[in-house]
Image (cartoon, rainbow, N blue to C red; front, side, top):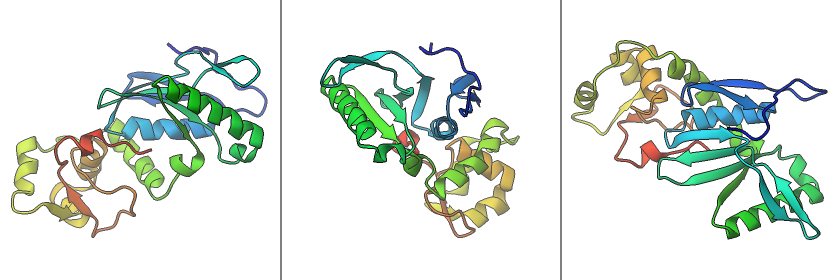
Amino acid sequence: MRVRRVVTRRGRHIRGYFPSKKMKRMVAWESLLERDALLLLELSPGVVTYQEQPEELVYWDGEAMRAYIPDLRVSLNDERALLIEIKPSSELTRPQVKAKYRQIAEQLLAQGLDYRLLTDKEIQQEPQFSNLKQLLYRYNHPASPLPTRSQLAAAFYLTESLTLAQCLERFGSDVTDTLIAQARLYVDLTQPLAPTSFVQLPAGGDRHASVYF
Protein backbone atom coordinates (compact mmCIF):
# COMPACT_ATOMS: atom_id res chain seq x y z
CA MET A 1 0.00 0.00 0.00
CA ARG A 2 1.41 3.36 -0.99
CA VAL A 3 2.14 6.03 1.63
CA ARG A 4 0.66 9.00 -0.25
CA ARG A 5 -2.82 7.96 -1.28
CA VAL A 6 -4.43 10.93 -2.99
CA VAL A 7 -3.72 11.39 -6.67
CA THR A 8 -5.26 14.58 -8.02
CA ARG A 9 -4.79 17.16 -10.73
CA ARG A 10 -3.42 20.16 -8.94
CA GLY A 11 -1.76 23.24 -10.37
CA ARG A 12 0.59 22.43 -13.23
CA HIS A 13 1.12 18.82 -12.14
CA ILE A 14 -0.48 16.07 -14.21
CA ARG A 15 -1.32 12.93 -12.24
CA GLY A 16 -3.09 9.74 -13.07
CA TYR A 17 -3.12 5.95 -13.14
CA PHE A 18 -1.37 3.30 -15.20
CA PRO A 19 -3.39 0.13 -15.89
CA SER A 20 -0.96 -2.61 -14.84
CA LYS A 21 -1.56 -6.14 -16.04
CA LYS A 22 1.45 -7.28 -14.01
CA MET A 23 0.10 -5.83 -10.77
CA LYS A 24 -3.58 -6.48 -11.64
CA ARG A 25 -4.55 -2.98 -10.57
CA MET A 26 -4.25 0.70 -11.44
CA VAL A 27 -0.86 2.08 -10.38
CA ALA A 28 -0.72 5.77 -9.43
CA TRP A 29 1.79 8.12 -11.06
CA GLU A 30 2.49 11.75 -10.18
CA SER A 31 4.36 12.93 -13.26
CA LEU A 32 4.51 12.00 -16.93
CA LEU A 33 8.05 10.75 -16.40
CA GLU A 34 6.83 8.41 -13.64
CA ARG A 35 4.16 7.14 -16.04
CA ASP A 36 6.84 6.44 -18.65
CA ALA A 37 8.95 4.61 -16.04
CA LEU A 38 6.01 2.32 -15.29
CA LEU A 39 6.06 1.18 -18.92
CA LEU A 40 9.63 -0.08 -18.43
CA LEU A 41 8.73 -1.88 -15.20
CA GLU A 42 5.61 -3.41 -16.71
CA LEU A 43 7.42 -4.92 -19.70
CA SER A 44 10.72 -5.83 -17.99
CA PRO A 45 10.70 -9.64 -17.63
CA GLY A 46 13.04 -9.33 -14.64
CA VAL A 47 10.55 -7.23 -12.67
CA VAL A 48 8.18 -9.41 -10.63
CA THR A 49 6.22 -6.70 -8.79
CA TYR A 50 6.40 -2.98 -8.13
CA GLN A 51 4.79 -0.60 -5.65
CA GLU A 52 4.44 3.16 -5.95
CA GLN A 53 5.31 5.37 -2.93
CA PRO A 54 5.99 2.26 -0.85
CA GLU A 55 7.21 3.55 2.51
CA GLU A 56 8.52 6.53 4.43
CA LEU A 57 12.24 6.45 5.16
CA VAL A 58 14.47 8.91 6.99
CA TYR A 59 17.90 10.31 6.16
CA TRP A 60 20.31 12.81 7.70
CA ASP A 61 20.82 15.94 5.59
CA GLY A 62 23.68 17.28 7.69
CA GLU A 63 21.43 19.31 9.97
CA ALA A 64 18.39 17.19 10.79
CA MET A 65 16.63 13.91 10.07
CA ARG A 66 14.35 14.26 7.06
CA ALA A 67 11.48 12.11 5.81
CA TYR A 68 11.82 10.62 2.35
CA ILE A 69 9.39 8.54 0.29
CA PRO A 70 10.91 6.84 -2.77
CA ASP A 71 8.79 6.78 -5.89
CA LEU A 72 8.90 3.01 -6.33
CA ARG A 73 9.93 -0.26 -4.74
CA VAL A 74 10.66 -2.96 -7.31
CA SER A 75 10.96 -6.70 -6.62
CA LEU A 76 13.27 -8.37 -9.11
CA ASN A 77 13.40 -11.91 -10.43
CA ASP A 78 16.64 -12.56 -8.52
CA GLU A 79 14.79 -11.77 -5.25
CA ARG A 80 16.42 -8.36 -4.81
CA ALA A 81 14.36 -5.30 -3.89
CA LEU A 82 15.22 -1.99 -5.50
CA LEU A 83 14.15 1.49 -4.41
CA ILE A 84 13.76 3.95 -7.28
CA GLU A 85 13.52 7.73 -7.47
CA ILE A 86 12.31 9.35 -10.70
CA LYS A 87 13.62 12.82 -11.53
CA PRO A 88 14.00 14.89 -14.70
CA SER A 89 17.68 15.28 -15.53
CA SER A 90 17.17 19.06 -15.64
CA GLU A 91 16.42 19.07 -11.90
CA LEU A 92 19.72 17.40 -11.11
CA THR A 93 21.61 20.38 -12.53
CA ARG A 94 20.63 22.24 -9.34
CA PRO A 95 23.40 21.68 -6.76
CA GLN A 96 20.96 21.51 -3.83
CA VAL A 97 18.83 18.82 -5.47
CA LYS A 98 21.87 16.85 -6.61
CA ALA A 99 23.36 16.95 -3.09
CA LYS A 100 20.07 15.82 -1.52
CA TYR A 101 19.78 12.69 -3.62
CA ARG A 102 23.47 11.92 -3.26
CA GLN A 103 22.99 11.94 0.53
CA ILE A 104 19.92 9.74 0.26
CA ALA A 105 21.67 7.26 -2.03
CA GLU A 106 24.77 7.02 0.17
CA GLN A 107 22.77 6.46 3.35
CA LEU A 108 20.39 3.91 1.86
CA LEU A 109 23.26 1.99 0.29
CA ALA A 110 25.05 2.04 3.67
CA GLN A 111 21.93 0.38 5.13
CA GLY A 112 22.18 -2.36 2.52
CA LEU A 113 19.29 -1.05 0.41
CA ASP A 114 19.60 -1.06 -3.38
CA TYR A 115 18.75 2.41 -4.70
CA ARG A 116 18.64 3.93 -8.16
CA LEU A 117 17.82 7.39 -9.42
CA LEU A 118 16.35 7.25 -12.92
CA THR A 119 16.05 10.28 -15.18
CA ASP A 120 14.50 10.85 -18.57
CA LYS A 121 17.88 9.91 -20.09
CA GLU A 122 17.50 6.32 -18.87
CA ILE A 123 13.72 6.04 -19.07
CA GLN A 124 13.13 7.57 -22.49
CA GLN A 125 16.25 6.37 -24.27
CA GLU A 126 15.61 5.57 -27.89
CA PRO A 127 14.86 3.41 -29.73
CA GLN A 128 14.07 1.22 -26.71
CA PHE A 129 11.32 3.49 -25.38
CA SER A 130 9.45 3.59 -28.70
CA ASN A 131 9.88 -0.17 -29.12
CA LEU A 132 8.32 -0.79 -25.71
CA LYS A 133 5.41 1.55 -26.43
CA GLN A 134 4.78 -0.38 -29.63
CA LEU A 135 4.79 -3.70 -27.74
CA LEU A 136 2.52 -2.55 -24.91
CA TYR A 137 -0.72 -3.14 -26.83
CA ARG A 138 0.08 -6.78 -27.53
CA TYR A 139 1.31 -7.23 -23.96
CA ASN A 140 -2.12 -6.15 -22.71
CA HIS A 141 -4.06 -7.72 -25.59
CA PRO A 142 -2.15 -10.84 -26.67
CA ALA A 143 -2.85 -12.43 -30.01
CA SER A 144 -4.46 -15.86 -30.02
CA PRO A 145 -3.71 -18.65 -30.57
CA LEU A 146 -0.02 -18.52 -29.67
CA PRO A 147 2.51 -21.22 -30.56
CA THR A 148 3.33 -23.71 -27.83
CA ARG A 149 6.81 -24.01 -26.33
CA SER A 150 7.50 -27.07 -28.48
CA GLN A 151 6.36 -25.26 -31.62
CA LEU A 152 8.70 -22.38 -30.85
CA ALA A 153 11.55 -24.80 -30.20
CA ALA A 154 10.86 -26.48 -33.55
CA ALA A 155 11.03 -23.14 -35.35
CA PHE A 156 14.55 -22.61 -33.98
CA TYR A 157 15.61 -26.27 -34.19
CA LEU A 158 18.33 -25.80 -36.81
CA THR A 159 19.38 -22.26 -35.94
CA GLU A 160 20.13 -20.07 -32.92
CA SER A 161 18.33 -17.10 -34.43
CA LEU A 162 15.83 -16.05 -37.05
CA THR A 163 15.45 -12.63 -38.57
CA LEU A 164 12.47 -10.54 -37.62
CA ALA A 165 11.28 -10.86 -41.23
CA GLN A 166 11.32 -14.66 -40.92
CA CYS A 167 9.34 -14.51 -37.68
CA LEU A 168 6.77 -12.20 -39.24
CA GLU A 169 6.41 -14.57 -42.20
CA ARG A 170 6.09 -17.63 -39.96
CA PHE A 171 3.94 -16.28 -37.13
CA GLY A 172 2.45 -12.99 -38.37
CA SER A 173 2.99 -9.55 -36.87
CA ASP A 174 0.46 -9.79 -34.01
CA VAL A 175 1.78 -13.11 -32.72
CA THR A 176 5.41 -12.02 -33.12
CA ASP A 177 4.78 -8.81 -31.17
CA THR A 178 2.97 -10.78 -28.46
CA LEU A 179 5.81 -13.28 -28.11
CA ILE A 180 8.38 -10.49 -27.80
CA ALA A 181 6.23 -8.54 -25.34
CA GLN A 182 5.84 -11.68 -23.20
CA ALA A 183 9.61 -12.35 -23.35
CA ARG A 184 8.99 -15.68 -25.07
CA LEU A 185 11.13 -14.38 -27.91
CA TYR A 186 14.17 -12.15 -27.44
CA VAL A 187 15.21 -9.25 -29.65
CA ASP A 188 17.56 -6.41 -28.73
CA LEU A 189 15.14 -3.56 -28.06
CA THR A 190 17.97 -1.06 -27.62
CA GLN A 191 18.41 -1.25 -31.41
CA PRO A 192 15.98 -0.19 -34.15
CA LEU A 193 13.69 -3.05 -35.11
CA ALA A 194 14.24 -3.94 -38.74
CA PRO A 195 13.53 -6.96 -40.98
CA THR A 196 17.13 -8.06 -40.43
CA SER A 197 16.99 -7.84 -36.60
CA PHE A 198 17.95 -11.13 -34.97
CA VAL A 199 15.31 -12.91 -32.88
CA GLN A 200 16.18 -15.72 -30.48
CA LEU A 201 14.64 -17.93 -27.85
CA PRO A 202 15.41 -16.71 -24.31
CA ALA A 203 18.64 -18.34 -23.15
CA GLY A 204 18.32 -19.77 -19.64
CA GLY A 205 17.39 -17.36 -16.88
CA ASP A 206 19.58 -14.45 -17.94
CA ARG A 207 17.21 -12.80 -20.39
CA HIS A 208 14.20 -13.69 -18.29
CA ALA A 209 15.82 -11.62 -15.53
CA SER A 210 16.51 -8.65 -17.80
CA VAL A 211 15.21 -5.18 -17.03
CA TYR A 212 14.84 -2.21 -19.36
CA PHE A 213 16.30 0.43 -17.05
